[in-house]
Image (tube, rainbow, N blue to C red; front, side, top):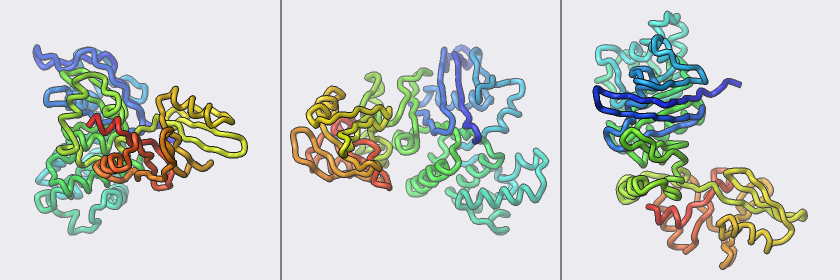
Amino acid sequence: METLASIEMKNISFRYGQNKILENFNLNIEGGKTYCLVGSSGSGKTTTLRLINGLLKPNSGEIYIDNQKFDFSKGEEWRRSMGYSIQGSGLFPHMTVEENLSIIARKEKWSSTKIASRIQELCELTSLPYNNEFLSKKPRQISGGQQQRVGMARALFMNPKILLMDEPFSALDPITRSELQKEFLSLQAKLSLTIVLVTHDLSEAFSMADEIVLLNNGKIEQKGKPSKFLLSPSSDFVENFVKSHSPGNILKEVYLYSVVNPDIYVSTQNSSGIKLTNLESSETHSTNSLDEAKSFLKKNNQNAFYWATDQGQFKGFQEFDGAEKNNCLASTQHILFGMKEILKTQATALPVTNDKNEIIGVFSEEALNAL
């Protein structure tokens, strides 16, 4: 099985003249996941991306790709193993779509047959037309959404394990941006790349990231799953940053799979007794007593049974002070729908299920209050 590329930045310091941009900066990025760098202008997001890519060299510290120290004397060679997609696609205006797509492959002396095969493959992967008419057009002759897809396809042309993206969707209209974000998630599910994406749009980060990294003045304020930014902000800065992007403003584009809290125990019951399984840690606890199970859950700050079949399908839930219910939310539903359901049912949390009706976590009153 092919390994997934990890990235590690150790004790990085970087300055523009006398201005400190990053100081003793440390960041670990797990292979095969999407990390979104967010923060205000000047927080160090794009600088971090360019350091990973070797376009900038740190004043001190080291960067490791797949546990190999980045050799800045061979920056161009290292960069070829990474895809890079930027705002506005970054296409060369004097080149055709085909020439833009194949520019690096031609420099690497790929055969025309191999290039043509890869172009066809990527056009299919990124929902681009595959015909001579389209491939012979200049960037100005195609739509903004198509330009961004071509930029994405070019970034993927050399089969990189790492994809770096600097606000790739910010110049697009809202409808096109939403379409491309969904296509991106589908693409990542197929390719399992290691992706580092810079964005000013918190809703984009919540929708697309496995983990969010919030930067402030060159330091990491918080790093973790999107739900943690709602449920466990690490500082007043983080809490205020999230609140300033409320559902009435930017978070209106967020879906429930982005904010689900997986740190819950799901209950199954059969002739052997009751088994409680934590979705996040996989920790289990077994008992024959319903009262003992309830006591265990209370000690772990959980006030409800979330019942599932032995195969993990949702059966219902029961808050300790109420009747059993079968309400649940689909992970693909909008966060605003989840908010309405929380208020309508007066539950402190509602279970969230995936397309297989498996419980993946809860959307809680606590998360709602954090917004």
